[in-house]
Amino acid sequence: MADVMRYDDNCLFCKIMRGEVPSDRVYEDSFCYAFRDIHPQAPTHILVVPRAHLVNVTEINRENGDLIGHVFSAISKIAYREGIAEEGFRVIANSGPHAGQTVPHLHFHVLAGTQLGEKMV
Ligand code: AMP
Ligand code: ZN
Image (cartoon, rainbow, N blue to C red; front, side, top):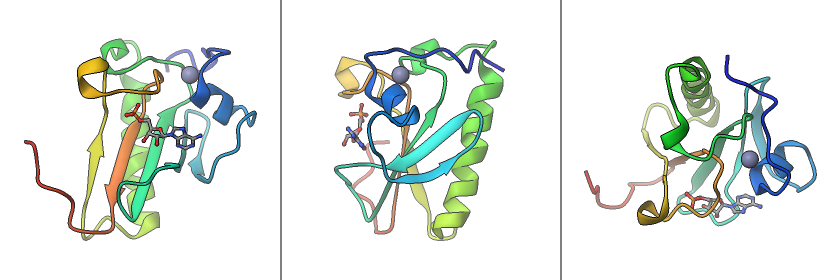
């Protein structure tokens, strides 16, 4: 598994996972942490974050692939627990400026609870 201890002192999501900034926790395990987005864009809007400080999708590689697989299995678990698995949800990972990424710690938005906006793809 990727270096779970990797963190950045100045990173908001690293601070949230260390309990230095409060969050509305939904799920956690040894490798990832999930909490409700502070500005929800849908009735259910959860951020699922690997504990390791990876900046975005550009830092995913063969070495940390197990970690990313683990994060997606957590997303599946969360979807069932939140009751959104049946009706469906969308997973988004903004990576870099053109995607509008605002927090430079890899995270997956899980959006659900209504008919979601028009699909871009
Ligand atoms: P992105 O723009 O894809 O980098 O997503 C960052 C997300 O983090 C945005 O949807 C913000 O609303 C959310 N966010 C920022 N600060 C917090 C916080 N303290 N607690 C929960 N969500 C946050
Ligand atoms: Zn971080």
